[in-house]
Length: 206
View 1 (cartoon, rainbow, N blue to C red):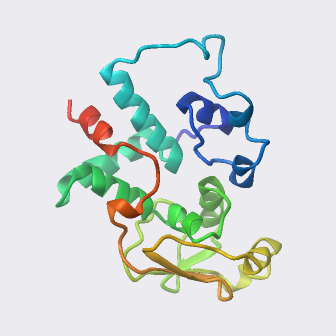
View 2: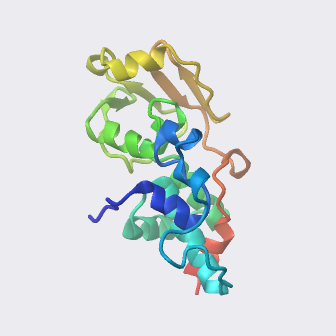
């Protein structure tokens, strides 16, 4: 499966806003978007009037990049969201939020979603006491995510134990145990990712 391997900062410039792909760097003055807030390339500063389709496409691309989901996987998620009860756009965002890699990031166990994917793939977490190394795994209400015992002695997780972590209202975390729980599925108003999901629904509905 193809993965984007170029500089992450180019993605933020292309979307014109921070996608928080590089952890702490995104919150500092080293952030490339702070220095040059326009798209890459010789025409990056040109003002362009976007068509309705282009606006919808950009919103879809932005959502994919926020959550690090490839095109085919994103489309499959949309199709599943459309089959569930409720609003398709809300369902899509909830499914993206409850991916294991995103949950690990939201719990504060990783500095970015990219790092969370790596940690999950390398087998550092369990879900309800069972091995979990698939970043796209859908976490459910009541699931407990925990750093494996053998991983807790690593400098990465020792540092986390010294941190004060704030998690979304639909989660709880015990930093001392390096354990988090999905208390309930997130509601749309609890998801702070700046995405206009109705534009994605309109794009795929054509």
